[in-house]
Length: 147
Image 1 (spheres, rainbow, N blue to C red):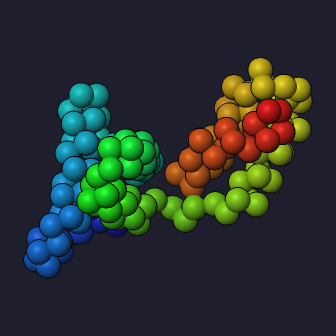
Image 2: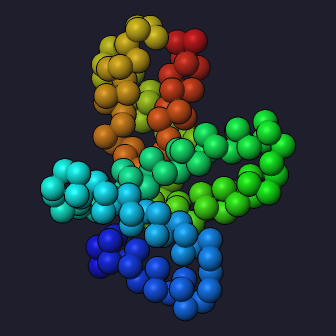
């Protein structure tokens, strides 16, 4: 079953179960997928749908910071619930040790010497970890070695 088919099934199930938050999240993902397909006049594959979901997770993580700063704990809780729903569609996330091993190997492979080589390192790491870790985590690990 493709990711788009799974989203449709989950939408139907959430409507039957009257799970409003899940229905809203799935509807939002499907709308973003449809918008991308219309804009680019292509049928999106699972990998492209994953990219859209990762982007949605990142946006929500950024929003949580703003909500916390504004003292909106109700929105923080809702957004965290949305993130947990979104991550159900992503592949299993990498552990800190696994991610660090991948980054260290990329540093060796690219002969990176300083922060200036960040682009080379990120270019090597991101295709490997696609959907399984956040670029911000990779950045923090690189900074640990070159910061």
